[in-house]
Length: 129
Image (cartoon, helix red, strand yellow):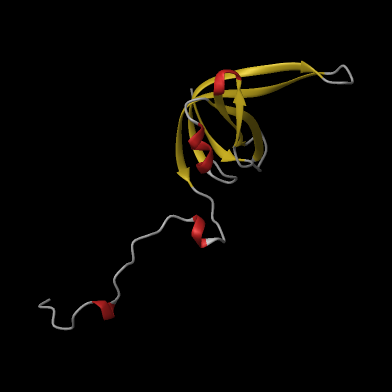
């Protein structure tokens, strides 16, 4: 299965038995539709908890606001809260992560360096064209 969404908060790495690590994060999937007979679009946001077992180093790239495309399988956690109400949450067991867009940051050091573009003063004046 394939889903795309924005990460809702920075990913965290958790240690589990046998020195294994899992990267946990959550995404928001936005959707919209126009109900029959309505003129305005209705917006829906679905929150999905995700886990990634393939390597904990991936967590450094999974920051709040990052748009990701995920491949894997979906699951459902069903539980009863303290008031006895049955609840559920979607989970996505991710096998592959593709980063589509990094979030805008105010901290320039957080953005990978971009090669300097040449300016007119960097080029010689005697070009043949």
